[in-house]
Length: 289
Image 1 (cartoon, rainbow, N blue to C red):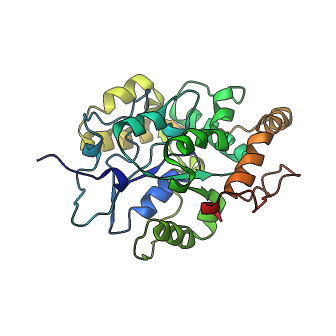
Image 2 (cartoon, helix red, strand yellow):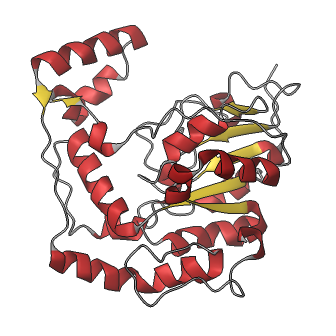
């Protein structure tokens, strides 16, 4: 019998990449009424689905979902907020017939960009560059949210500051549980997951061709092969950072969007280095106060 998940039972972390999405996914998964997807990032509604689990029905990425136990089906695909590389994701969700609750994590965009570029360099031999507009566009947080507001309404969205998640994860999770009408639940802190600075990769894992081959192997062989490769051909990454000139240029490019995420969504951007922007509670969306 096909699994039935109601349209309003989906809880989707849509990004942003390198803002703590894996950590929040792990924390929210601890609630007994929330069923995590397998994998964490099914990327079902994106066009570039290299990591997508091959399923015909969206519901099938929750093999453990039990309607008698679970109130929400949780996933966390960061590709959902990579416009303009990924277009019309919100429209595809709407056309599929779901009415999800949406969580979106943000952080200081300069730190996000530096983390994202270094992450790409660690995971691939393709030399990600700070000159690539893609990394700037992913940091246009307010613009990335616009299609979701249009499709599902602002009341269906919660914006979470990565700094707040790091400072008080139980408060962040408690607020989200309350928004989801779930019973309180204490979260066990397992630390920030998938942190760029702590990633260890082998030279073989950085080959896109080899990665596609390895994904077809049984999980046990994947794990054993990775451990062997780490010992034999480890990759030692040298972190790269923005030049002062590119840093300044990116701040100018993002200034308008940072002002929007502050005023429209109530995000405190005072520590982001955009000096004359401050949160105006009178303009922030009611559900973010």
